Length: 266
Length: 202
Image (cartoon, rainbow over all chains, first blue to last red; front, side, top):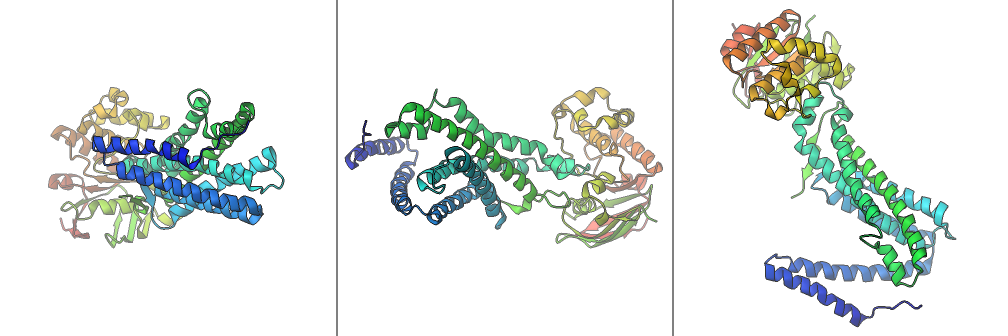
């Protein structure tokens, strides 16, 4: 079967739904119509640009081009993780923290998938590497930013409780342990929900895309299962790394809580 | 040798402070709110970044693991926080005999240990916090207005307990607004004004 390709006119028809959304917002006085339309326009432009870039990268099929794209995507995801939580570390520490947690977790899982499960030849074949790292990044960035948001917000709110433990001789790990556990758990919830809902409540995006593009459903399912495992691993690594690094960053070697290193986002 | 030796302790916010405190002695600090009393106590237990030296029985703070220092130089803030549902859960099993011995001395019933912290009165929480601090068996106790929320009877019980602990060798730095309390407990009195500490002659 040949996949049905939506044309420009079809997209234009679908876009009326966004306009409808904007209309609802205007009618209810939500003041979101501007944001709604602007983000829709952004989405279209960004995706078109990405399509063009990927077409070039696929045509080049060189390791340098694939790595460059992967690096750029990691950098963008790291920036998101540093920006999203309600608090952030002052200076470059926050950027390093998110780059390390997002970069290590996504590279580790994608390399594992490429070298042991999918092994495309050559390994850098961008049709595999780029979409893989994209979907892994989307998930690890979600987990890491939820974990950091919980951790920083919790540390600020529970400051007196944390210091109450420190003044009685607790180490920073002891005093922060409940908050660290809570933050990692919150970061893992989305992927757990995603796994348990997959197929019953939602058809995962990649699988839907592959089925729409004409792939046999069982093949699409196998891909999706592999992806879910990768995402679960990546999310766990990234949120754990991010929260532990954050715990180091807001304390010092004398086991003091150093909340002045955090700034609240306006 | 003094129990606690403080040399040029300072932070960008306060100091420098230098003084000695002997074993079994109580130093009281009074002064207006915001004068820097709590800042000094936080520096002494190394909870805020600071420079200068502090020595406990001759051992420099820098040579000690920070949590070990804080377990020996325990700071009790004016509004002690609780991080678990009941007061009893804040104690280690090894501390329980000491806790059981201290409770009646502060007119507290042992049943309060299993009551939710939020259901204790302010005064009960404050006395329970003192027990929590003493249960660590500190060498120096840094108390920030430990009787502020207490009725006269509980104040008297607290002062009796502190006198007993002093006699047993504990050293105390006590921030208090009460002249009477400073006279009852303190061998030495100091006044904090505009982040400066001065000796009050008695």
